[in-house]
Image (tube, rainbow, N blue to C red):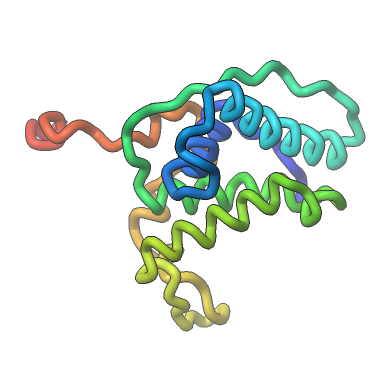
Length: 160
């Protein structure tokens, strides 16, 4: 497996989700939330450098957020993508970033237990959420936070 760099927008989704699902305190100041994003950003760059044999510094990360509630499938898909691109690095499983992603996965499934049910497939048991059409409809890798925000109700009604 080859680790790729995720976008800053992808990191924004994860940081927002960590707050939304109560993995980190909702009253953390923006500087600490930005630091959390930088930690996730750096972990991904470390994994990508390890996989490519390079030693490039991570570009600057600037945290962006929204007041909008993210759909749980969006969060789970973002988690899967991030984990996939970090897990090949030997330090991943002991990292703070892995601990945060594991806690986020648990928090999402605790709040949406129907998504965490295991279903039998010809490949074995998998999480129910991975069988839903919304799972496939959600981007595998998020470029910008705005790409996964729900459309305003007025836009949905107008069919735009």
